[in-house]
Amino acid sequence: MEGDSTKISTTYKELCETVIPGNMICISKQQSTSEFARMEVIEVLENAVKTIVKEGGRIGDREVMKLPECSLRLPAFSDKDETYLNDFGIKFGVDAIIVSLTRKREEIDEVRELLEKNENL
Image 1 (spheres, rainbow, N blue to C red):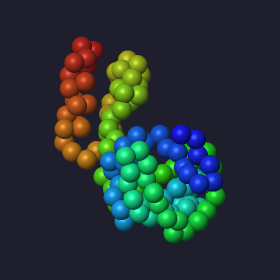
Image 2: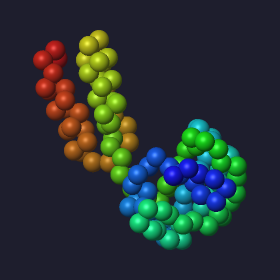
Image 3: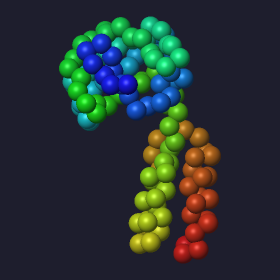
């Protein structure tokens, strides 16, 4: 779906499963905390979320979506991170690996398993 003046598209495929009515969705410029639009979820449909604008602002392409009241369904360590670990980190012998935004111990355990599988360590 392409966004327009009445709807916003997102690459976050789990949005309908993540938010509930009453949650807030904030849209801001990359790394900005002062320029944003704030919307309240009023209804969750099968493939869309209806909101009401609480605080307006100009929204452009590739903005940052923040869901402050929600537990996101995103991996702490992505496929891209794994590629970087294998192609750069292990190859050049990094001393430390930091996995940010972890929510449970199993996410750290997954990274440890990747490291243990590597013969070069």
